[in-house]
Image 1: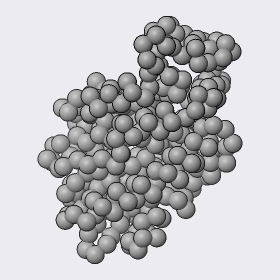
Image 2: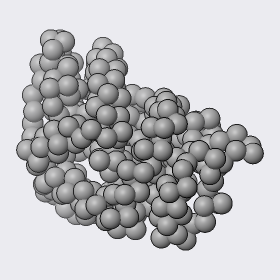
Image 3: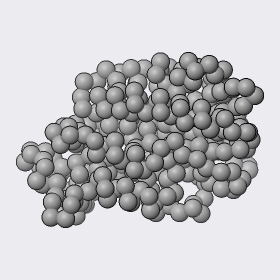
Image 4: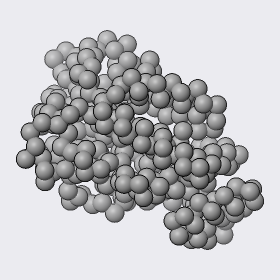
Amino acid sequence: MKIIVLLMFGLLLPSVHAGNDAAAPGTAQAASITKAPPRGTLYRVRDHGRTAYLFGTIHVGQPAFYPLEDKVTGALRQAARVVVELDVRDGGSFQSALARHGTYAAGDSVERHLSPGVLGHLRTALARFDIPLEQVAHFKPWLLANMLLGLDLERNGYRRAEGIEFFLLSAAQQQATPVRELESAEYQLGLYDGMAEAEQEDYVRETLAQLLAGEAIKRARNLVDAWDNADGTAVEAMLKEETRDDTVSGRFMQKVLLDKRNPEMAEKIAGYMQDEGTTFVGVGLLHLVGENGVPRLLQQRGYEVEKLY
């Protein structure tokens, strides 16, 4: 289940080495390809003459994902503002939040907070990437779990720097379109840090079991394929399956990533729609599906919501 958190929600660790001048994935080939298939999902939201487009993203990518489909790129060109969950180019804010929420104070280490059995599995998983535990012992369990999943995704060809956010942010920069955020690094990392110590141990135990068994990357491929084919039926089925999962990460998804964040995002989007011009919103795909998804919440507020694909 953790792999869904990383792929579909804005909680995969940003690539803090990418600066403001990072090129958009797929920019070079965009001019020579005129037709691209639908990917993710796209909604149009209207209210009193104002329009917002909601595009479902994943937070890693591959060169083959680009360029994006014409409806997406057309909406992006019209935008008076581009809204993302988090501006992943802002490495300074991320590092500050990481120091507060993801690391132990001097003199403390993860070895004091995990049981011997879990520590043994953690050493095994780290060894797959030639990382000694001592090198990352100041990281908290949730951060180590997410770091390992991110490394596994990278090893299998799914790169954070090819994620949709970088495409959207670079396009906004090239068009001189203002960028707004739905959340912040402080907020996102604080969600994980809010887990009790026992929950963090369970979270890393569950993650390591999936990682070491090869289950994590298998789920990742299924999710990426569903996004790449705009397969809404498959995505809905995955959401239902994962939110029925009675694990720490399953409950974390339902209570924190969905029940808490979706209403907050809908409120922020409604606020941005008060401004003149079109708003383009790129947000993790699973925020846009289900009865508690952002489109449904906006519809309940009286907005006209149309699914374009």
